[in-house]
Length: 256
Image: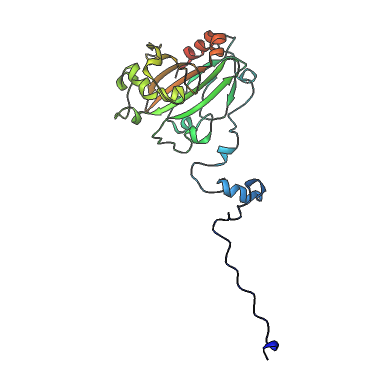
């Protein structure tokens, strides 16, 4: 009788030991394209990401500025950049007054990342943003940084002198000059300049050996409306030695 019975079922094996590593998910490079994009967040609705964060803005022309900007009327060896509403979100929103400065013809405009451009927070930004950037590998780089007054004073509008002294202002905005931190001992020169329309500018020279932007920085700032505009010229040690006079001419030319 017993021999006619079906043989017993094999025992159910226990799950693999917890000491065994589970099968890892496939590497990102092996995922289908859409899954890859979802994984890294480019197809999500994160407010700070948009197509402009990936695509190059039309205004960032990575070609020599001498091919499309006019010569400076005061020095034909430079070209003149005059910002307009088509250049930045803040200019279109009226938060920044048009500004201008000269550049050597060999410089190129570079892209400003969307997260830094203020595009996501206009017309009421609470933190500083970058307006435009230009650079030349042999000479240095420049950028225009704008800061809302509410970050510096409780007044809705103020002159730069009402905000504080040159030392007070650079203490607040110094990290936007260096790209990381600001040490008051790095400040070599702080001065006050008034141009023909009586607009007051604060001017700075900093020696910043640990700055992300470069070992040498020049800056010029003024306030108009509800915004402080800071113009920064940066250079490495080698760029500074070769192009100091050119960089000083660039920062001197900046005005609103």
